[in-house]
Image (cartoon, rainbow, N blue to C red; front, side, top):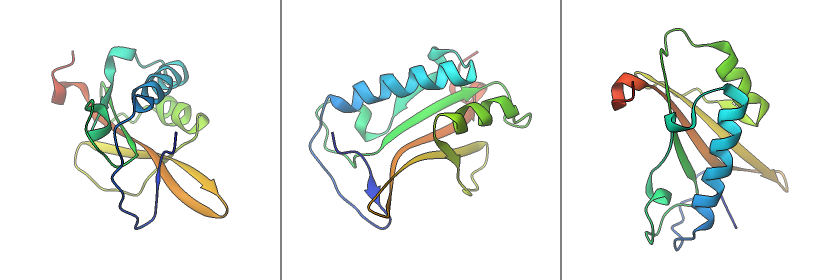
Length: 123
């Protein structure tokens, strides 16, 4: 499965069930490394929609109790499995990404949005 886009690249590809399989792997990794329950981790965006063409980037929403607390174990756990915090300023969100570096070219492959549970009806 080819996953990711280079900087400033835009590409739409046909749907593949590999996206869902990759999400399930990432979901387990996130849960294991951060102790966030799996029901708080969702596959979002166009790659989550069966049979829809999409940019080959997996988007993941992770619901947490309190962003203001910024539990360092969550960020540390995500960092341990290859996610880096991005300098993206969005209200009530923390954005992280997993990058793939091949032949000196950086590709974004997976994005995580940390968001508060109450914003998504998860209690």
